[in-house]
Image (cartoon, rainbow, N blue to C red; front, top):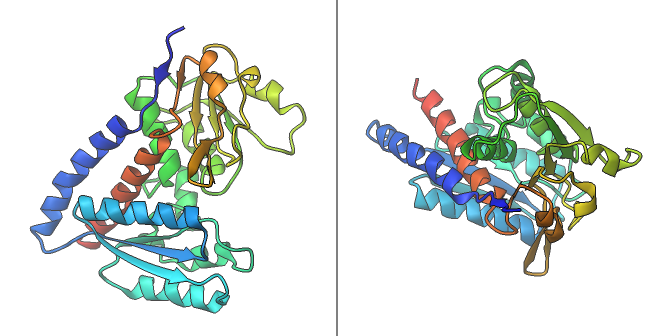
Length: 285
């Protein structure tokens, strides 16, 4: 069976081409869209993700701002950084890189963000807009996955979609996004996790299976219905090697699958820049 490789690069390029035109229009009015990141702790994978976001900003004409909070700092240090970013007019949108060390309260920091500067759509107000299908920033990785499905003409409406994982940045918002009555969505979505008995039985029903766990190779070919579309949204670093949630053997049964490298990652950054651009555009109204 011929397997379609769901490369993220062409999806991202289409989004970034549109972004480039809108950035030029903003700059004619003296506005450079600015993205901020707050990195808490010294996790090398998180630092690498932040670096990629700043590289993308430089490449596509965005200003970027970074604040690093040491892992032995206090919650007040994180909250002060949030307040600084809220007040900085050059920062149109920002994010707090997830996860943070256990001693920090991530939810409290997100709730303190100015919702109009929420680059990743995770403020409660913006998640509420997602629930109500109102316009607002959509979490970047779920938005990128939806864009990928649309780009590759993979039908979603009325199909069985299984999301493996219920995390706040991917699994939960993705389930909301794909079950909404909108273009490229309107699916029957099941969310499964480690608390579910016989998780494989649920996954095998999926016409589209999206792994969003961050556990290397957790999804194996025995768990996937032949001909299913499989997307790995979760990744893990083992040393310098990136390992997706989806085991490589799944390509033997899937009709379409994301590659180990270059799948969802490029689309996530593109959607993050789009959210930032839209925040900058709203600030000019």
